[in-house]
Image 1 (spheres, one colour):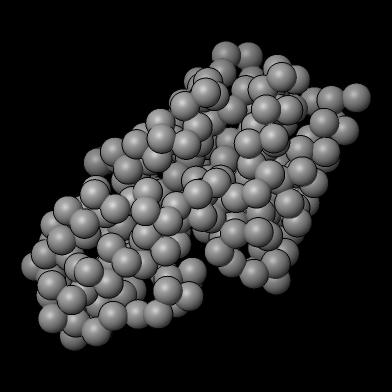
Image 2 (tube, rainbow, N blue to C red; image 1 turned 45 degrees about the vertical axis):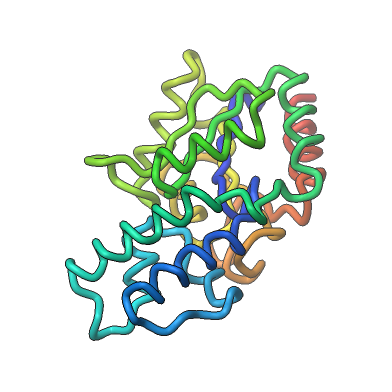
Length: 221
């Protein structure tokens, strides 16, 4: 039985890659560094904002000072433009509707900074009640550390690891679920490849939100 489904945000519930790429390229330009093609960001995002900047900057510019400059420029731009192109993936809303109607609790565990995570959830998923919305926070370890999964489980009293599914689109997410000991579902519609997800032996690889929901609903029967 599934009592709780925890979702990654970027590349799982929302296609954010265009807005992330534009914001990071803006920051790179402000720092006098070359930009990257949008598709390159599929492999750069997912490990938190600092690692995004480290991956995007030229090796000789990956200093603490330059990373902080990137952070200021990125947050300024992204704060104004994070919803320009970002949209839920097809099928996300019907999936959340079905899960909610069945009594399954919902939560979000992301490596996106907390403020950005909360703002995007409020913008696109305002009608859903999430047990918790967890992003990257000062003093808290980021995924693949499993702490965020346990925090989400604790937000739903009476829920165990065995009654939890974690869904994400990257190797980081697969490692996180594996480290937490929960059933882990790979979202193959996201930023990474099916091969990357399969390498970690997840509970399932979902080709669509509908397929993921069907599998979870089967567990209810």
